[in-house]
Length: 267
Image 1 (cartoon, rainbow, N blue to C red):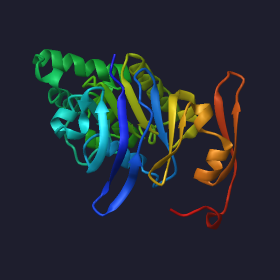
Image 2: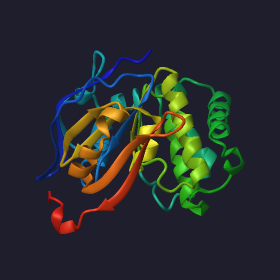
Image 3: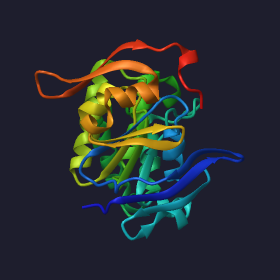
Image 4: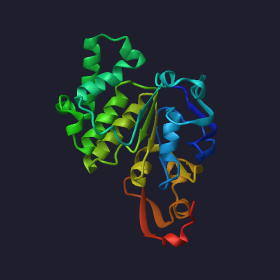
């Protein structure tokens, strides 16, 4: 079982523009999805990129006894995988080649035979349901296919911590559910999964813990029912909404109206 991810006094941003400020969260435990939600500019993607070591940060970021904040980028990526919102546009490699390359730079992939790396990469493509695209070039794929390719590159390394930035944004309804089910199963295997989502109903349906970010701070943290309330949605998103339990016992969010922009507090 993976150790918890500990975040305390964590700040991140870009040069002279701080985005996340002095963030402290409850321990992020393995075994379930933690969803980061919030309006545009709240700091969700910045936070994930900082945890992945791609932008500057300060504060405590630990995976159990491992000090990730002091680790090099290579050392950090021995423990975690990061899936960005988009892949580079002009990549002439095939899907299989990109997944193999992602796996070979991991600690486990570097020790595996060429056949083993190939088989592991194909197994991930099969699991996601895109093995039929293995020999397709990435630059000829649709946006949704490229998003699934990015997910395959993150999953193939079998990380202890999986960081996903809007993994469902370019997917149709069927693949949204398939992807959320897949990463939920990945978390149940004893790993930490943190995912940025704009769709609140996906967040409350699949997440064990929800972190509502606003202006770079944690406005609410807890179970879906505790963190996503009409009061939180009114304050953070500027909408009038109902949070109800459906006939299957799942929390659902229904937005009735949005307040005029002038009535919503600016950052």
